Length: 281
Image 1 (cartoon, one colour):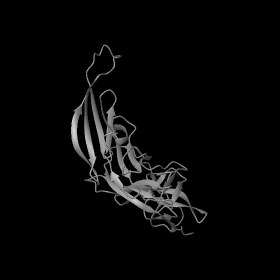
Image 2 (cartoon, rainbow, N blue to C red):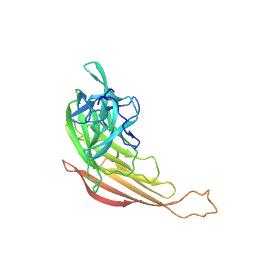
Image 3 (cartoon, rainbow, N blue to C red):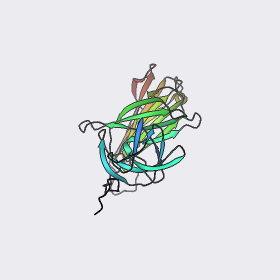
Image 4 (cartoon, rainbow, N blue to C red):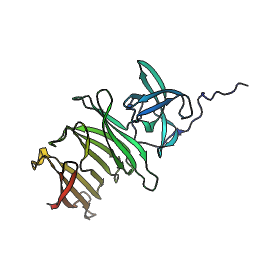
């Protein structure tokens, strides 16, 4: 009887849990760690096909994840990917925690803005440590910034490179967003200015609503719009709670009891600090 080779495909567990990575067939991601190993099978014990460095692009060729594995506190699957090395096309498996969540290339500079999970805290703390990174046009790291993300049932994420909005020390604003598709799930926008060498944290935004019951919205007003100075950012916060209405008139619009306030943040040369707060009409 022929012995089974350890390199033959095994009946690996198919991962059915949703995760925040963009893993649809033919979508791409970048290597997020300094180095990532590509394996012949979805296991760290299988043979090594190649090693890829930070910023290398891979393409998902199958949507399903396999053999979820706990590394760096994160329980994530392996995915089958395609990549090119010295003009040679190769295929193998990578543990998805080594890849970017999303990335954007700034056409004006050729710089790549990307972010991903570095590790997950123990369960009692329950947060992911997210890192934002900028690579130059040669895919070399030129800046990074970390922050904690506390998951709240968000189902997808995206990154955007925005104009500096009148901030005098910024060349871009990088927004990292975590969002949900159902009522009552909060949206979280983590914003950073980029001056060409380093990130600085801007005031964070959150929002949530439950149709016909309540809503909570935060918005930023940047220097280009308020004309109060290039070192000032305003945050407006609006909360609405539905009031009772006549049940025999269901067609009537729901009326909300609304409260608003404004926070003022000032840049001190290193960070934005809140210096004032007031109620607004």
